[in-house]
Image (cartoon, rainbow, N blue to C red; front, side):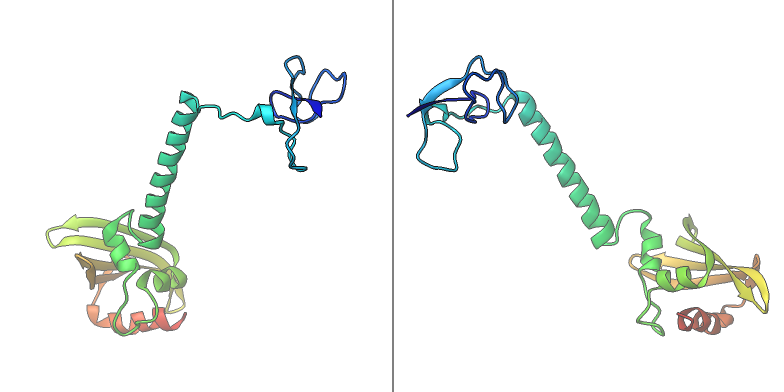
Length: 183
């Protein structure tokens, strides 16, 4: 049984129609062929052909592949592995104090202090990380600044300031207890 089919999409054409009802293509170059025995198919047996990819579609596919690979690498490095950005800051923020092994420094400090700000710099002692945040001290608003010395993947507390004035490091354990146990 011969039927007329759209040469663009293979859909069966209405007799006398000027356009394909499925894809909208003009019906001037419709083909006639035997209907495939598959009742779900609309493509005549004479329409089976593989069209080669054009250079532009290959180029677009290649660019999309490169974008996906670069985005995946960035995601793995920055989100899953916690890398990227400023490595010394990440060492401190993702690190833990021995006295508080269940809560990272970054999470505790960011939750406790308002206006949390992390920065890093190098001095004669090596990589330093500065954390500044606001909290109440003795019933008054105050700005706390914590300095950490970073060596490779470890860190240590180097200094503390309260409203710009140095504070003896001996206060650190009780202050850290306040920060970590308030979570």
